[in-house]
Length: 346
Image (cartoon, rainbow, N blue to C red):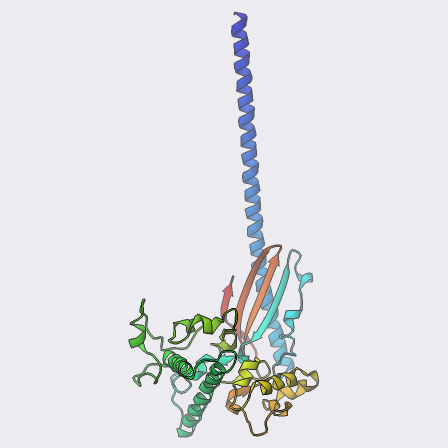
């Protein structure tokens, strides 16, 4: 065979080998990249599972703590172990990450569903005129708390707007049994004209976010702006007895509890309950009378006050590196057990 052809064959063989080597290199690199991606995905999924389990563990720890607190204490305040849980860390429990847990007393907020008491008692009518009048007065007192809350700083809602909001909430919750709407409220005739149209609920409010569906309530009022706080942290759909825990209520809500309580007086109430020497006095719903400068001629209705909590919201935030997951559970604490009534994961 001529020497030139042999050289050509050798050159082709070399090119073929180089091509095969290049192809194998590419395949190897691609395989390694896919394996790394699968490893990252698997690791990520593994961490997501760990985060979920850590969050669930935080809820379980909190439930146990709340039951133990019920056995140890006859009243609930910000001195209790559940209230101080947000200051604690749980590094010994988890090898891979960190868990932060906090518990909020829902009974320290304004109970939206207590604005309609008479028709909402599980379909039962008041036993007699005395009970009817008592519930009627309690409804009136509860609604006035929200009115005073909206009218005062930092919200400063106009009187007409506040009345519209209150009447609209009542109509939203009310069973709509033919009595017609409140003077400034709204029923189906209003909501069905909206775009898109929807019906008036005529049932209990399930979440604070639901308020955005109700006439007169804006996102700015509910969630605030960069210059003004919103109402949302002071409101709750949980609990329908109309009682607010004075031991955990925020300053604006304390100020709204009765006519004549101003900002200075409500701040004095908070100073009193934050003084640890007064811790045992918080067992009585009338402790506020001992607060410095509290006017002797002002009394908060007993039907509006409590020092015990039934509903709590637990926030359990788990973190592994930059990955985070929050599990939120709302629970109802009974005499001997705990029932989860709300659950959210993000």
